[in-house]
Length: 403
Image (cartoon, rainbow, N blue to C red; front, side, top):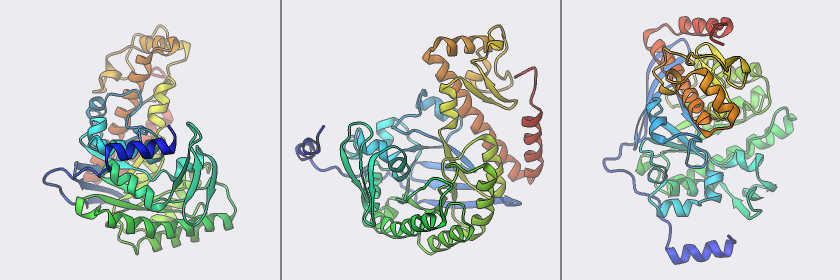
């Protein structure tokens, strides 16, 4: 569809209006309930419910968690999912979603939704990007259409989608990178943070109980990370994210940046590590004080025949599972994990059957939620160090018979 056609359709259908807040809307809030070392146990309240933290958010890029029914996502214990501004602005468009009642209604998810800004996908997927102070001009990876994404437009799109938690537009660069390039992108992201906040308030986001998070950048340069965190902390964001990590650097660098960055971030607001990660990444990051995570890893792995379990990773493509009648984990409360044999899962994966992707994705999201639940309970009990050590030992030792 051409841009002219889109404009004509918008005129015919009438203006897109952001969906109203649910009745009895609660303002966004965060309570820090307990700490154990640097690990934090908290609670986020949004217009669409309460999110217990630390929390893992399944990624619903295009208004769907791939290979999952939303009811099954909820049954895993997930209380918040992520939608992607870049993909949804291209199709079906934010304006169309708004006219259809907002993203919650559109995707049949009445719990909390977080949307990212679209900036990362513009940098990684779009064609012929041109970035300047105003924003980013790019061509869609789908059909080559030209778009202009500014901080204001990103927030406008998220407002039309009606997400509970929204993100400022930032520039995310791959690591390693030269200091000058990291500094330039970080400073630009700070200026875009101011413009994003101004647009969020123009759209009455705070009055609707919604939240806008700032994003700390600075690559792997300690003083730039600290400057970004301190400057963002002066702005009235409802939460703060750590961005620009897990983009090519080894894990130890990511953890070093968290050790440096988190002490410079507000303690009374939620902290979100974007795009992370493996179960070990989650465990290590919670230990350092992170409250929220998202990552495509559990869903992508499930679609490619890989299951995450408390014993470790199980590759169902391997022929060793062809005659194995055991489930992935008979002690699990997840139907996908305890009801189907490894032999059957192996067969589905090798045959390319869609049910295999569905069951393994279900298993993986459930395992991630179990891991987060275990960490929350350990922080509440003051036994996080024991949980950390025991989980690490289980992964390191594994269960050879099970794998």
